[in-house]
Length: 101
Ligand SMILES: [Cu+2]
Image (cartoon, rainbow, N blue to C red):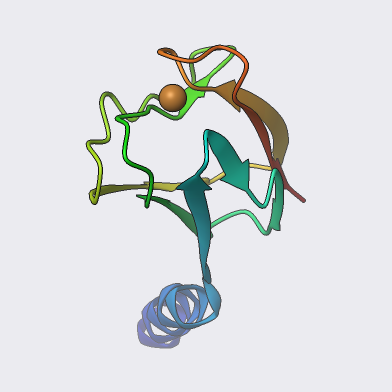
């Protein structure tokens, strides 16, 4: 039993070590990169380097940053494999995709 717990804890620690953080920069009314390829468990940070406020809002509603003010950022961890389209709710022409695979 003890070895089971030890292996479980090691697996959790290793998953955290290998979980990556990806940055999407918001600038000039666009998400860069527009498509971000990640692995399940990874975190995506949207950094708003624009002069305007923006959001990162999943089309299907699975995540929503709320307002990201100029100079601020928002992070979300994607736990499952999925391709998620998102947009800025203030500027609907701003589109992006998170591909977790
Ligand atoms: Cu916007």
